[in-house]
Image (cartoon, rainbow over all chains, first blue to last red; front, side, top):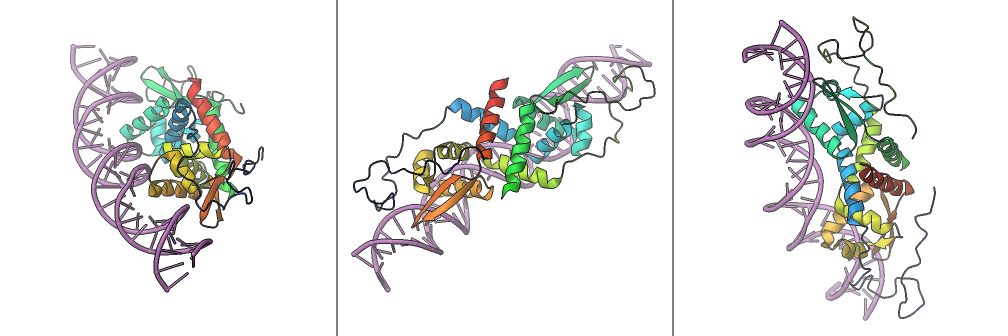
Length: 132
Length: 132
DNA sequence: CATACGTATCGGTATATCTCGATTTGACTT
DNA sequence: AAGTCAAATCGAGATATACCGATACGTATG
């Protein structure tokens, strides 16, 4: 809705014969393409970390459950209906990715969403799915 | 910025002794927790589809490359510096997930970002990484 | 200190995903 | 029709993730 993805379609720089926009040189790319314009590795790494953390049904269920407020590990155990060690390992990954924060109170550990940006991520992803 | 994650922290419903907010009942959860308040499976499925598609370094690189406009499959081949079949399979997944659209022109296939929401997803995810 | 409980970590196995050569398909050219 | 090229699909081996029982750790309580 913001900027049109199809905007920068006039490519082909300076082809030998300046007639058609493309489809001329018989070959699409002659091998030496752009300097691979990769984004900063740091950025990609950060994105990967978040996406990998959320690319799992159980971890996604955890995040959804935490929308309504913090929960302790054992409560999340019943939400996921999975053995304790399984749940713990998923929570570890969410924590490592910075999606959730923890708070210890006695022998319990409470989990909560670290940043509302995570929730926006969910909503955007859900919207993408409906779109087509 | 919408709803605050730490808002609904007053839980514990009606404990026998209404003194402390938690940490009382000696047991955290007695087994029968909430009705597992799972979100609609359709929503989770949509989110999963998007996150899985983006949870890969090469596919992420493709999306970044397409920010500047559409590219054909062979150009993306040089961007990823990977064999043709590898690139094709990644493009297939991005297409299946609805992240990219395709346009055929002669024997070439051009790929472009399907929805700007995908780009917002990247930016949000990148921001999450910096945050902590 | 011994016990109980919540949680984290450590294996090994099962499952899913990635990779890439080989082959097929479709579109153009001669 | 034969040849060429871009792209898609297939199949098998490599790699990564998920799963979960067993065990270790930390914090209460008796």
